[in-house]
Length: 606
Image (cartoon, rainbow, N blue to C red):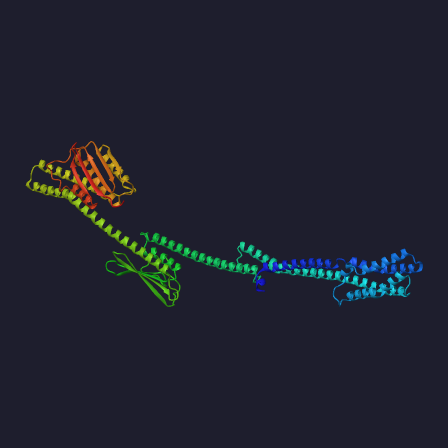
C-alpha cells in the first residue's frame, strides 16, 4: 500500500491493469459462454423434432393397423428407429448436463427410461404384429408434454447461460467504468491540480515572486516535487533576502566610506588654507566629523612644539564665544544647550616624528562608542593636522632662515660696497678739513671736492644697484621669464644684445633655487657691465639629469693676473649663493678672451 501511496505511476499502472483485466474477463467469459452454448440450438431443435416424430409414429402405427400395408409398416419401423436414434443422439446428450442431480439430466433420463421400457416396446409390438394394446396413443399424448418440458428446460438453460454472460459483461463494464472514474479522479486530484499549482508557482517565481508556494501535499512524485520546489523557493528567498541585506550593508559602508573620503578631501582642502586662522580651518572639519561619527563635543588643544605650553583651545560646542575669538561673524562653535549625559573621552596626540603639537579629545556616549573605522578616520585627520602644523612650522623656520640669509647678504653687500664708499668719502671729508685748516690753494681743495663728487656718484650708483637687487622678485611663474627680463635690462645697459640659452625642464628648480640662480646671473652681468668692455655676452642654463649648469661668458678684457679677487664683494656674494645651493662656482679667464662664470649644483626638486 505504501508503494501505491508513494507513486502516481504505480496507481495509474494498477488502473490500466484493472481495466485490461476487466476487458480480458469479459472476453474470456464470452468465449466460455459461447463454448458452453455451442450445440444448444441443435439440441433444442432435435428435442423439438422428437415431439413431431412422436405424433408421426402414432399416425403411421394407426395407419398400419388399419390397412396392414407393409410399406406403412416399414415407414413406421423406420420412424421408431429414427426416434430412438435421435433421443440417444450425442447432439442431445451434449446439451444435457452430466451431473446426475441436475433437473434436466433427471428429466432426460426419465424420458429415455419411459421410451425404452414402455413406449418403444409397445410401438414395436404394434408394428410387428399389426395389433397391440390400444392405449399407446394416450401414452404418446402423455409422453409428448414431457418432451416439451425437456425442450423448455433446454431453452431455460441456454437463456441462463446468456444471462450469465450478460451479467459478467455488465459487471465487467461497471467495474471498468468505476476504475476509469477512480483513475480520472486520482489524475485530477493528484496530477492535474498539483501540476497546475507547480506551473503557477513556477510562473510567479520567474517573475521574481519568491513567496510563491505549492500547497499540494502528498508522498508521491508530485508531492515530493512540490515539497522540493517549496524548499527551493524558501532557500532562494533566504538567499535573496540575505543578498539584499548584504547589498544594503555594502551600500551603507560605501556611503560611509564616501562620506569619509569627502571629509578627508575637505580636511586637506581646508587645512591647506594657510591664509586663514586655524580655528576657521579646523572647526568646520570637527563639526563635519561630529555629523559623521557618534562623537561630540571635540576639543583640540594646540601647544608650542618647543615648550609644550598651551597657546590655543578649540571646542565645537560652547555656550559663549571664546575670549580669543576675533571673528564675531562666525558662530560655528556656539550651541544653545550642552548635553549633560555622562561621556567618555578618546584622546589622540597631534604629533609628528619631529614635534608635538597638542591633543585631540573627542567625547562620546558610553553606549554609543565609535567604530574601529571611525577611530581610524579620526586618527587620519589628526595625522593630517599634525603634518599641516609641521609643514607650517618648517615653512616658518625656512622663512626665518631665508630672511636671516638675505639679511646677511644685504649686510655683506652693504659692507663690501656702500660702506667702503662711505668710508672713503669720510676720509676725503677729513682731508678736506685738514686742507682748509692749512689754508692750501683753491686748486687742491677743488681737487678734493671733485674726488668727493666722484665718490658720491659712485656710492649713489652702488646704492641704486643694491636697491634693484634687493627689490628683485619673480612676478611671473618660472625662472625663464625672469631671466628674459634680466637679459633685456642688461642688454640696454651694455648697449648690445645678451644671448640667452635656457635648457632646463619645467618645474625642475624650487622657488628658492630660482631666486639664487637669478641673483647670481644678475651679479655676473653687473660685473660685465662694470669691468669687461665686452662686445659679446651670453647666458646659458643646461640640465644633465639632476645636475644644473649656469654659465655666463663674455669676450671682454678678462681678469687681471696680478689682482687678488678673493675679497671682491661681488665674487664673495656669488660664492655664498653657490654654497647655499650646495654647488660649486668657478670664475676663470677664457682662452679666446673674456671671463667665464660657471656654477654647477644638484636640483633638489625633480
